[in-house]
Length: 115
Image (cartoon, rainbow, N blue to C red; front, side):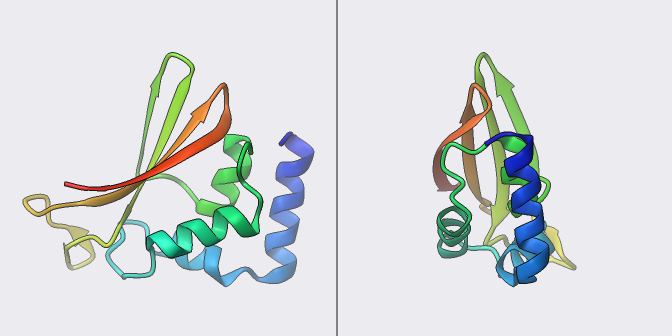
């Protein structure tokens, strides 16, 4: 995807009032129970995000909880299904996160982990 495709994704979300994407974005730390694997898979499929650029991906998923860059890879991490108190993650308990890998700035894979 290029800048025009990123713009198209933004316009599509506005037109459709895409609540799934909003649910994902609203649940920033995964404390509300809105983020889950099924929702992640649905967003990727519905918006055709395989091989998309990072900007288009972030339009749908929102700002990641953290990002790791090395060599040609960029990994975006989003918490889901978190154990929280007052909408803050309890650090001493396991955390679940979705990892989305971009190689040469194109989305190539996902992995879900809890630890």
